[in-house]
Image 1: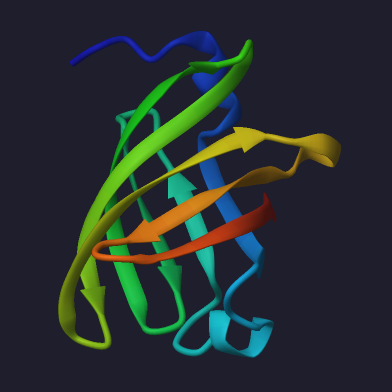
Image 2 (image 1 turned 90 degrees about the vertical axis):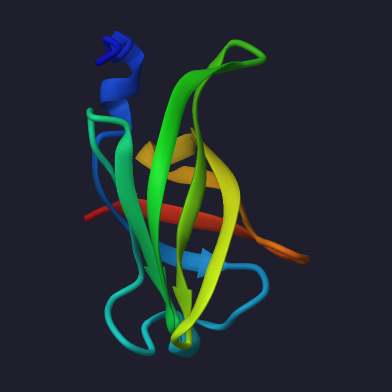
Length: 114
């Protein structure tokens, strides 16, 4: 297993998805509380609406800022689904990023610890 860079530790844990620019907050928590989890083992999960995906994550940097980029596989309303996404540590200890469902849906998101 590859060693996780020290800056990647800032991402590890559970993040509450508090906003997505395509779906309203009532939809986000449709089945369970919307969240994004990163682990030091480069995996995790994303849950919102009727979607649940399992992550494969790579930590790196973009324009000098730490980032987590991931691909995911899972289901959306019981149909197989997959895509990709990424996040950076933003202001006030929040994560900001983009989430893509192949083939075509995309949304920006904001997360807080928890």
